[in-house]
Image 1 (cartoon, rainbow, N blue to C red):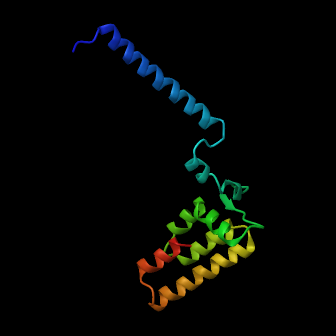
Image 2: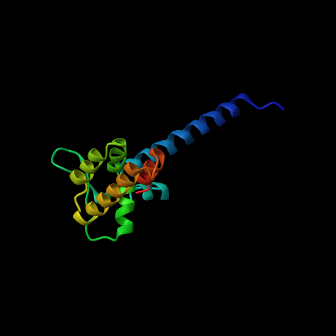
Image 3: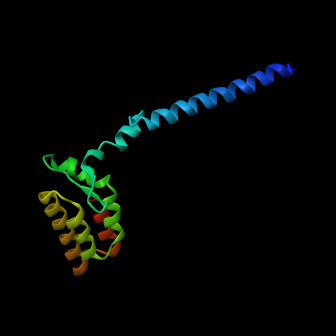
Amino acid sequence: MFLDKSFIIFLIVGIGFFYVVTDFVQDIEKDDGYPITTREQQAHKYDRYIHRDSIDRTILVVDDIDRTTQLEAWRHSDIKKDFLSFYPQFDEMRKVIKERVITKNFQSYLLDKVNTIEREFLSGSLTFDQSKKKLEQL
């Protein structure tokens, strides 16, 4: 089966044009600030609770929402990643919570959990990996 060369060139140009147009439209949709997919909407669901302080650090402000939403905002924030990077330095982990979680009742909740996990770790009832996993689940 032989195809005409001009048809093959037309097909290649058409596919290239289609790719350029769809890529261009996707870039415009990303730049307009509105998430276009469900996955992107989920990724930005908790952005309203994440702010910047005066020295441009990420802070978490979760006032007037239920505990489940507070925890989800915490889990989706960069603060949690910073917090976990200090493991097993529990004092530094507590410092991250005190400085970057602004809502006092949620801050107290997290500090209580960290203190409990630290006590269990130091008493030997939790191994290094078990305590790390519990902190990751916060």
